[in-house]
Image (tube, rainbow, N blue to C red; front, side):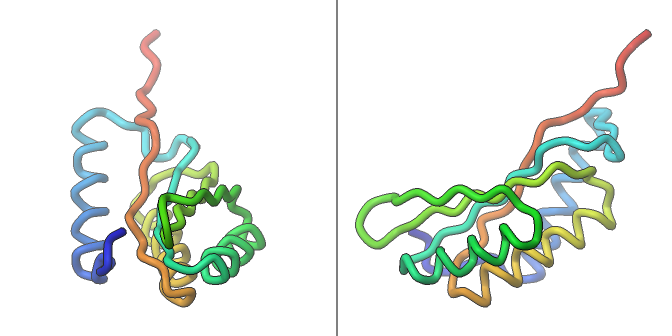
Length: 117
């Protein structure tokens, strides 16, 4: 398990880089798609608390055990990946994970290309 999470500056840089790559690939950022967030926790009670908060916020949540004392949380929501939306969902998930002593590992989702006619 990672012992240190992403700092705010590193997290912002990671999001900016990912969105810039998506734009280069021709991703239609305004198109909704499943966006997955991952986080790691050491305690079952912490991951359960974070999972409950994320579920109440509208995320579909899956928790699995990854060896002794490590839990993986995956939270999914269907949304666009416009710059402002990304800032909002990353901040929301990051805050919930951090408040429950977890390590936020980032987000991902498919690239949606404009269909050719």
